[in-house]
Amino acid sequence: MSSLTYCKDCIYWDITHAGTTTRAREGRCRRHAPTPQSDDINQDFGTVWPATFDDDWCGEGRRPGEVAEEFLVDPAPRV
Image (tube, rainbow, N blue to C red; front, side, top):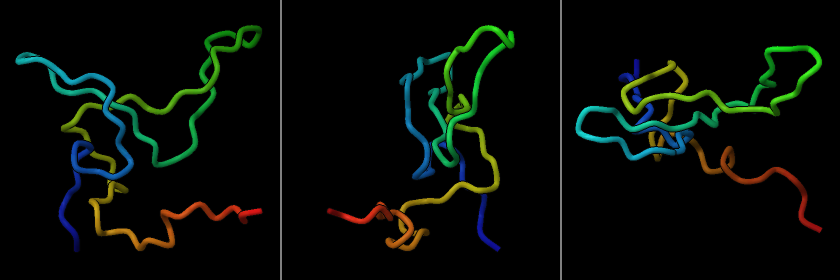
């Protein structure tokens, strides 16, 4: 069983705010596609990745070196 991977150590985490002495670093989880964000059916706010803090975790996090390279390469054929 692997140990817990926090967002700050995860290859899918993209830091957006460096944090301060009183606040944790903030970022976006890019593990899955962004989700639609809207409070009203008539208004579209676009899509967003989940906002997380560096000490959050989800159970799907991966550290560098834990994922085979073929999963990180763009699968689209090159023309």
